[in-house]
Image (cartoon, rainbow, N blue to C red; front, side):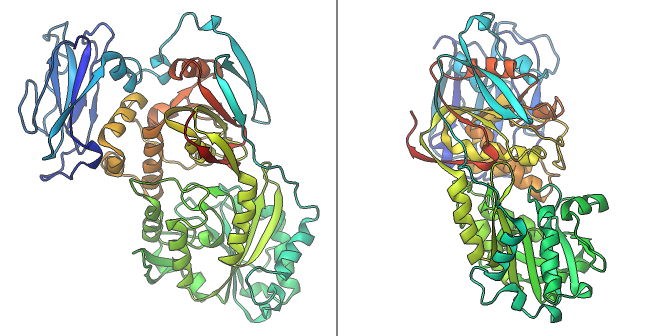
Length: 586
């Protein structure tokens, strides 16, 4: 047992029972001291909900055991800090051992970690408050390792990645190329005149007598609405629609309001004289109306202008989506034009310990739930959706029935974006193209391709984040990536949501879902990120990825983290590609 840690866990830790007593508060501190010489050198304290944690002094050769409820040396009350902060009266040759005493009546089991394995779980080095790249193990002979250069499109140019010669590149996975529509206005008019699943063309819907609400996504979304909103508006007016009976609603969900200049950019050169536009507010009860509860239990409250309309026209794009499977369709109405409660409950339809990523699924739980909610309006809903290629050029229009036309669009989008890969790889290199707007959009590429990397494998992300963080709420600090991943794997995927809720009590509706999703990503895989536009401390504040200032440092760290002869997949357009894995890992 020389140089080994012993970690005590209940048998079958993936199915731990809920606490039978009051849940431990955030005052339960986890203090971990690690240093290669086994000397205690620094102290950092972190909250660990759900788990009662004891810090025990012992040499690496000792076997430390503690049963549930047993008081062991230096064990503290749940609401007391760890003892001896900053003191120097501890044995210098002692190293701490984490003994996790969880609330369970099951028979405890001893799980042994070698010292090297334990350090690796915690990020391969001593925990410190320094930057992530400073915690990466260094190899003085790294410059002598044979490398090959792989070029990937990034920020309107190519970026050169030095990849170890020992890595085997299995495939470079790209979306199927497709030309943009040759005549945009003609293609749009043809789609409106020959709608999918609708009884009649849009022009024959007695437009002159109808109150029409056009629902548009906000500036953070990639839909090229400016290219076709003017032709759409002209089509409606040419066939009898009255400006005084029309309204443009921006489906913001929980996002910030659109500014006038942003609205102009989003809608292009459309002549809006006499046609008002409004930002949706998910918290303004005066402009919300309760419609009922879905069969899945979601409280449905939508913008009152939808309930007053005769014809609703959602305008959007169909693309791979991490929770919906594919965007578009009635997503513009719910969650886009819903109350905060509705948005929160609808988003959580896709959250479970078993599955959190639905990319490429035509009918996810969230999709079916929102379509049921939108159906409670009892209104005619005529969608106008586009599918785009990897350059965000419009390839096709899909118009008509909110469900049937959407599903046809999904089939077309899948034919471009779903790509077969032979098996899971050890390493995936992915660029955020073409979803490069901000952190929220750029990080989609990580979730899109995660299924093609084995559990515990490495994801290397090149995320452009053209407008920086965007409107994502970034906490002031987080656990170091190695420690966070260790804790997430320790508590198991079924407890990740509770961990996130305890750690981020102030998180908004969307932040709660995004935090859970990001935590599950980080639990499954090591993620490294390079971006010129993100603040240098973004990775440190979020904790879910390790951020690097240069691609050379990132690839050097990747070489040390990954197997010497790693299998590698490359996704130059990860924002518009997702894999269909055909066989087990290599």
